[in-house]
Image (tube, rainbow, N blue to C red; front, side):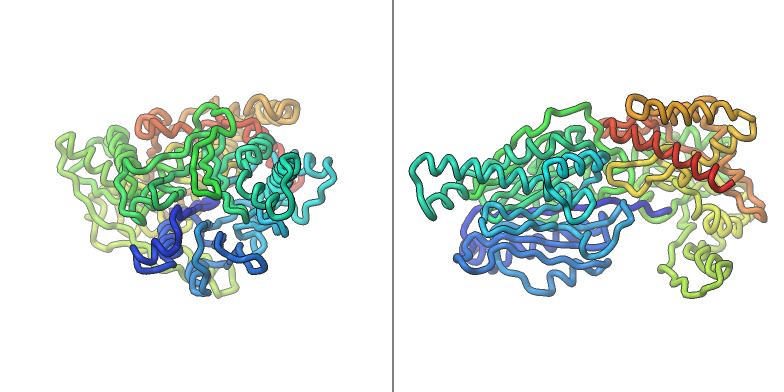
Length: 576
């Protein structure tokens, strides 16, 4: 309902046979390019601010371009890029972008390219990542004498990895000279012996964050590396024709007509490396840490067409039935069940299945519709807000006025703005006896720093409700103690968790309702959230839950959360 935005999606293809082979078998030398287009379109959900692609032509003669890159901004960026006409090549890499940093413009769209006259020193990078310690990495680079042109994790990573790639090439140069090689024989030796594992180990050891980093070199190396906690996802497929990688498993299944068992998941700290000669291998770049795979990927971001995700989302909805029964006083006969389009649809099926398994004959309706996005061209704030409130519409007559409860499920409740400004107001027009708003995820209480657009505490309705409870009860000492603890020890412990400890979930729920309920609304409202235990029961292989529990997998996430509370209090004091 309240659209959360994700950092990025990645796609890579490496052809393992000559281009003539694909032209003869599939009818086009652009077969791989067409597959890349499909992979990117199937991941459009992961980023609509911009897109970019890069490719390397291993057959390009000396003196001609061999490494190409195209980028564009906007939701139609993919179509624009592929409409420009790109060469047939053996290595392709694509990227979909949404910024979590607020920075926009073509210069921030991936891939990023570092040029050099030595083919092996050309580096092109893209990724699905957000680094929590970019200040420290920047200081490390500048202490070595480098001066990055732009301050940002993407550019700084390009410069750091590029620096390590330079050192790898120089190592091979010395090695080749020691073997008595001269001229282009040295170049060939370097191109054929680059060890990207060396480059990745000496680069990624400096980072704290969630990432899937992908890259190409001008000499024909292709690689992807996943963070040691497994926060961000990556899947790959290999056969005798191709090596391909994507952020989501169904993308590979659909693009290459594969079974689910054909595809492997890149493991935490692991890299998939394809050498210039086409040999591919898996390399452990960083020691794997405690698995913290992002549960929001399963709840919301990744495509629900994945076989496991589909079942997990159904399970999330199904196990909410006891709490919903309690909220409607077991009056299923006088209750209508629905959902907010459209990412909660699968959880909705699970919820209604859960009632049917208990022997109930549930009534289901398509109660809420989302209209096309309205242009807020009116300058007056009140009129613009009134237009925004009508983004959603309802099915009139879908409830029996003043007789039926309405249970409506969404995948998450984050800021609460859409509920207050639009959903609750328009649902009240149906005159339900009671509205039960259900979230298939737990209360979102803490910011994310690994690639989701949730960076400030005050954005979350659960946090605002908790702070309101603290102030109502005069618990000023708790605020002061938490503030001082955050300043004194930002790394070892998330002190913000102490703010929630005095309150039950129901107490916070009731305060959220009080804060989000429109003044002129008549129907009573009750919130039902997924439990933490329910989340882990439904998504057992994706235990990353820091936005719900405050347990960050890395020290950088803990530090940033503590700093977020310091900023929140400082801003409140400043605005008094």
